[in-house]
Image (tube, rainbow, N blue to C red):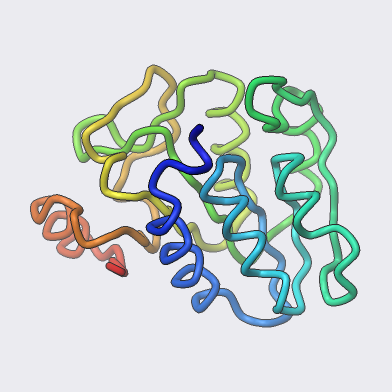
Length: 183
């Protein structure tokens, strides 16, 4: 159900994110349906990628230009996301050029949030292991918040979102030095 929700917007966001990733980069790709769409677009670029969902692994598997690095961890049956202590331990031994994070919620007050505590811990570990963080969030995420805190919204480097994003979010992040890409 979540995969077909806002499918066209997710495709536009994925294309915009792909333009921000350079050939040869090491990329950590968060779980979530938007990140699966990003994986589908990234298959045309020479990359080292560690995806945190079985669906993204499937989208990247077998592509000769993709060095697919799989994390350890437990697979959440309802979503296919890879979480847990083994996933976090995998992240402590690598460094990425770019983290691509897809939140459950995002707001200036609550920051980037996730519904699951283990998922939030993996998102934090991905961010910690990366030089820059791209947050990809359709505008509906800015009216939601979830229980598990990931990071303050202002700590990301780039936000990729759609044109329905609240203007105050764009203004606040831009003023704080976050690059905002609106598709």
